[in-house]
Image (cartoon, rainbow, N blue to C red):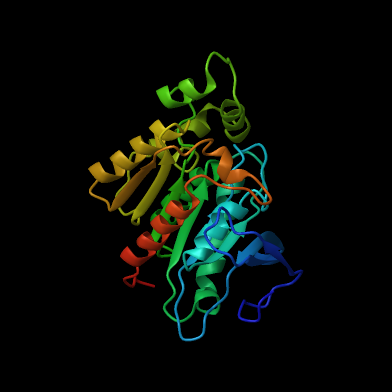
Length: 292
């Protein structure tokens, strides 16, 4: 673990190859366990370090996996892109259990990151949420929770191909799955939602939240042939209609999104350079201080 990180137990440093050809340098990350509450530990992987004389955005990141699989390795692509865009990233190994535990864990990590933001990103560091696919759902849910609790303040949220519609019936998803009667996303929603009442809870299904006021600026990234295309674009449109700051960018020829975002090891991720640039522009546009 890098010396500028908060003192954390069980830290193991390793190298993660930067996705695509965005950067020739490898991303250095460190696995750690943080104590978010008395007796409650959460495994995380940290990317980047505090830079002397500079302030970096600090991002709490959630990997994908359709609520049925996925781990810190699957989050490497997006976390590395966020780091290459200038952020310090805390990627969360949230529990693959039914709602609400993954959301509660994410919120606890967010509060820990806020408490340690100066050690992580420097004096004045701003805190963001980010996630892809199922992790995009969790990022949006934790954002709603932080809004409702009036803490911690968020500078923005980044949602990549977020899973937001448990009906699994959008045109883009039907086109991607063809005549199949089941898919990993419908199975994932069955695993995540413990019962019908959970589907009515905005923290479980943020795409259906009735009250959106007070959410931070949002960046939504999705592929043009992405199964999650329609639900992601619809959520961005709802945020915009609510008068919130939102940028929705649809990548053309983003083959195999969101699966390409979840692959482990060295591989070429479609639109990696363009996604990194979207992150950089979003950090630049939202760097004004937020109340602490």
